[in-house]
Length: 241
Image (cartoon, rainbow, N blue to C red; front, side):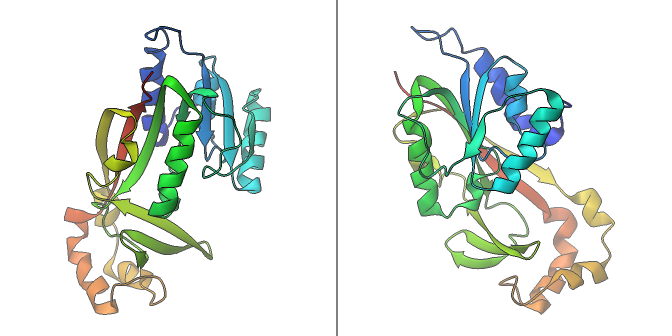
């Protein structure tokens, strides 16, 4: 599968766990679960290529079908089924590795805690998990505020939730496991913003889409080069043996 920069964090997680397979008393089985696994370019393909037994769950039948098309075209049996990360349809300690990629950010913060407990439940002792959270440093934080750090956005005619976290806010989710690595990645939009006319920026504003007033949104145009970015917090964790 052609590697893309979008998948860089997942690729790095794969390279990391490849080095950990034989570091436990009982070698870790190459068996992995992706929570939110569907889409045109399923990240599970990276692990399939490295000899992992792959499994995935996704709420969207459409996204699952897209992943199935990808699998058929590339000769990969990814084993993606319908499932909710808040109630994962697998037994305790089934997988050596569990991850999500740009999926858990669509849950509210209460449900995020439930999903993480489920991911850790199906993770074997000594196994590793990988999760990411949208950082509150993202600018602008688009959408209507529906809770502390929770924003509802209109995307393709549907309301979609995004939850944003300050730097240490997600740490308590991992009180029962070891945080092996935590990093923040920031993707700057300077090139895009530099080409964006003020008229197009102002045309984005809609009253039912954002908490910003029309005047405030318009004045933010001058800040776009210095502040326009998408930031994400990534955690690699290990379940104690």
